[in-house]
Length: 424
Image 1 (cartoon, helix red, strand yellow):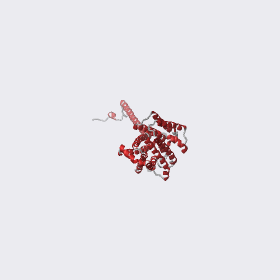
Image 2 (cartoon, one colour):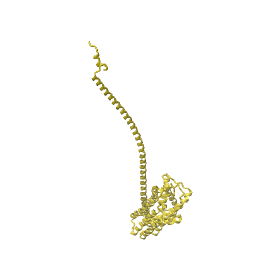
Image 3 (cartoon, helix red, strand yellow):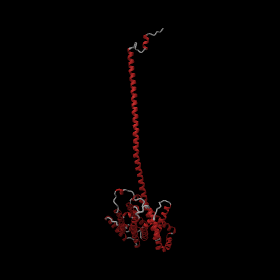
Image 4 (cartoon, one colour):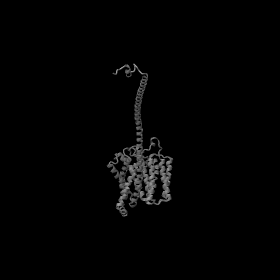
């Protein structure tokens, strides 16, 4: 029978009674190994915890930095978007201005062609200029009724102040039309380029204005150029020449009168003022046209119908009036984002374009002396514009339209530029 003896029990005991030295050593090694493993695991766990904590802190810092970076990035992005928007808006304004300039030139050329063509078959400038003012009046009344253009609020004082301006405006228009009926379009425009001469001469005594030697010097090529052009002008006519000169004087007096009488009226913009001048001018011109030419219209109408037909005649009269208004209106719209000096330079170049186009269309003979004189007069008009340019300083150096700086006023830089007042 199997009996439990101490010797047999010993191997299963804790080893404290009868331990084998080898086994004890092995157990010691195992214990140390386990302890090392436990320590390693503990160290690894601790390290992982520290790394995790540090990683969590780093992640939180990254989130904070990312948010800050996003916020800081959004601000420059906002600035970039704003600048891009401003740049896009600036390009849009420049594009619109360029379109207005093109239309201004185009409408003016077409008007001069239709106006001269109509006068060739129906040579009654008083009636034709009356119909042109009627076209302006009907156009403006239409845009006022339809609310396309703000309706001007006029007072009795304003009507009294604007009446003489409208009178000189009307005289200048009809006398130019008389000149176009008697001479070539190109030569009439060369004579019209002499308007700065009368501006300087009349502005001194009437406005107390003084001019620099450069301004006076710029008048010399204008006078010499007009004289040279007149010497060999095939279409020269004394009545036509007088008409162009009267138009120059009348336009200068219109400008001076408007400067003296319209400065206090701030509720009417340039386009509305132009419409009012046309309406009042129509009341001036219609009775005068009947008095001067009325007795000749019936026979002249029959002769014109015999030449081109009734429908064609009415078409020419209609287009002459429409394009007269359109080129004037677009000139005001072109002024929305340019300075008066830029407008004046553009006006000088426009005159060159009209002269060249009319010569090509009507095939007017041009001698070398005539061409040289015309070019000299136009160069003088350009030099006059540059000589009267005011030096830029401070806010005046901005590229914004001068008209906007004075608000919606009947008498502002836009109106002065369109009427020549920017150089007074």
